[in-house]
Length: 61
Image 1 (spheres, rainbow, N blue to C red):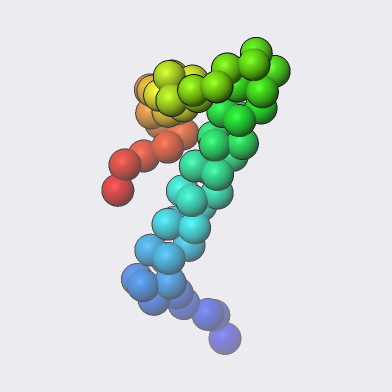
Image 2: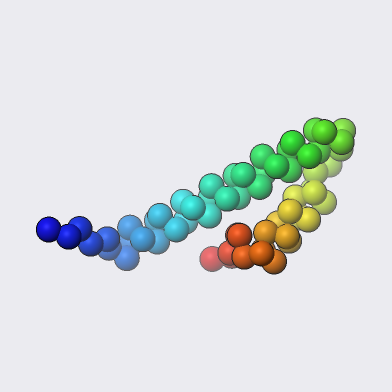
């Protein structure tokens, strides 16, 4: 018997994928800021988010 996902399950899975991508982005931001002794990582975060949106890695829901 084939298992079929509900729309809600599919949406939850997609939201979880986006959350994982954003978490990886935050980890990268922290790592880069730490490497370069940068106390304010907001510009790094913005640059990474901009790049990921340009490459469609993170899609705004």
